[in-house]
Image (cartoon, rainbow over all chains, first blue to last red):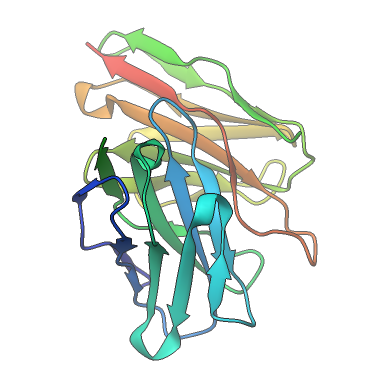
Length: 114
Length: 115
């Protein structure tokens, strides 16, 4: 069965620090990959997605993620975080069939010290 | 702007009560999903529906049922609420139209407390 692993449960950084959140998945076939973000008190929203093509994808608010197929990874990065990036981040994967459901990781809580 | 609306933001129910959580989407999406979100466990799929009157069990269906009589509405039912069903419940929908974005649009969630 597919699974998604986010090894960092809680990350604490100072403003302007660089961020990398790890995400690994277990499915061996072709996949679509997502990062969702949930700001405090708000609903989950899409940060970025990978479907095909350039493995380095850019999302909103300066975030990017790199798909490394050989490592089954889709790590999220941001060169310089802001206090407003405090949120919970979820990595997710689905098989490329349009009917497949999305499998979510357990989430990483990011706290930014002002 | 596309919307997934969950009828209640906060709900408090007693043990043994039958609880209905409602979700409505206005995007004519075929697929709808119910997840529960718990700290450290991420989002776990309870039930999903590929289309009207269709439903499939997710990873944790025990103690829940669903209803999808109309395309825009997907209801989650707790037949007899228990304290271990205290959680945040998230509804999501998705289109399966070719060439579309196959990710989810989420509702704002219902925080259910069972006492």
